[in-house]
Image (tube, rainbow, N blue to C red; front, side, top):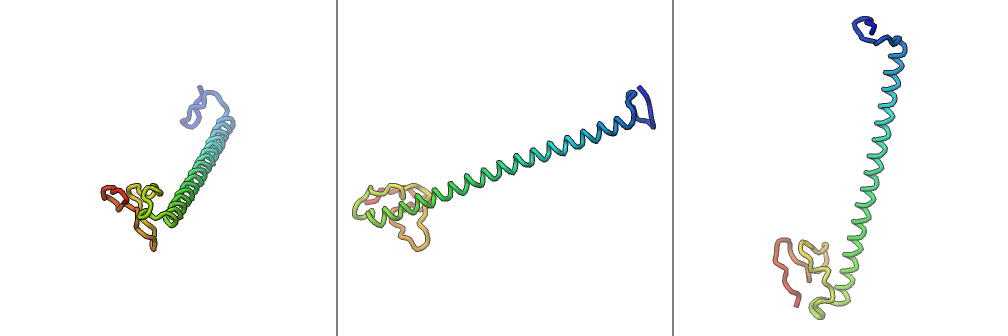
Length: 110
């Protein structure tokens, strides 16, 4: 073991020590870049899945409204059960027939 300026170099020339430190630093930066890329990819996948879920929900709501237009619950109860879920609210300007208010007990539509 050799001492130089208070540092232990274990007999390795100073240039080699600096090269090792530099290479380790470069490796660390590359690993961080790969990790960041993976995180970004996962975030993008999550955002895509979230948008797809929102689109599916909107499609389901639109289909439900179309069924309500064709078969209003007052004339044919049971035709459209999708609006009977709890915590479902009508869109602005839409009839509230068949919807259960948040926190209310579910009532049969008849």
